[in-house]
Length: 182
Image (cartoon, rainbow, N blue to C red):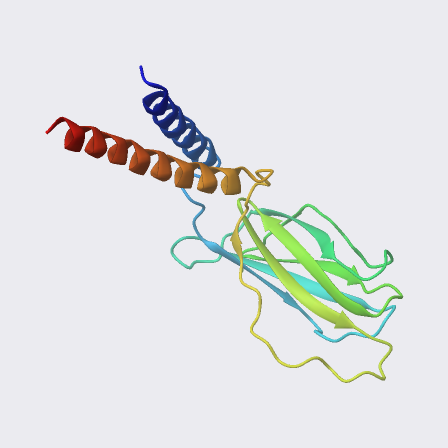
């Protein structure tokens, strides 16, 4: 086998393998339903407790009772903000609440709820009370839990690009060979 053909075949093989590895992290079937996370107060004062409520709906939009939810601080200024992690179970209305303590450092606090395979985030801005509230924005929406793939998705993307380049070069080599023999 010629060196150029071998390189093209190797590139295609590696690209396809990386593409398949990247797809191995896709969740099938995708999670169904939704979860919405809301805070009782979007601009609480420092050192206060705020109720944070997750509402879970099934794929038909009906409240999902009996779903276990856990909560965590996804982002916070400093290290004093805390949330009761649970787990807690949704009621007949599909709702479950936890308590966030804003801590003593001003800034944005992001709370995450994981309810079954679904997750959602909510942002709050804790302040000493003298600051103006943040500008209005759209609420965060829930998405299915996404595993940390350690960058495999990026490598899979570049692997597929490399495979396309390899296929293109292989086709160019074949076309060149045919042109020379004719």
